[in-house]
Amino acid sequence: MRLPDRATTSGRRGGRCLSGGTAAGRRPLPRCGKTLDLSRPIAVVMNAVLHFIPDDQRPDRIVHAYLDQAAPGSYLALTHAAPDPTHPDEQNAVLADYQKTTGVPFTNRTPEQIAAWLDGLQIQPPGLVPIDVWRPAPETEGEPMLLTYGVLARKPIDG
Image (tube, rainbow, N blue to C red):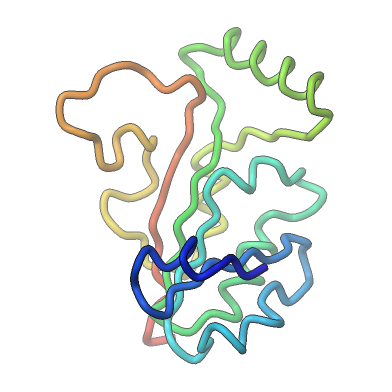
């Protein structure tokens, strides 16, 4: 999907936002060659996406399907909901209500599960951490309603 230039470029020439499929085993960027030069680094943004993909649909393969098509030096930005051991009852209630209301699957995954998808990538500082710790705004307080981890990783240039 290509959005109107003014919606995606923020006044910068040549910017585009493309939405690809998430089915494992498919080449997710088949039509992007007209917009993106896949021989050059790109950004793959998977924020708040993969927790909607059940394990049997292999979210790990989805991540790698995108990165396999991306040039060395490309970045992956990813966020994912995780089990919250400090507020399990509240989290379970929110998720049960969400699934009852929407019928959409939702899978919390541990940081260790998410990290396994990043094998071979260069994890950027501060690493795979809760998003409220990643780059905190000055003088912010409060806890996230849903524990979410975030990471920025780079596809190595040297293979």
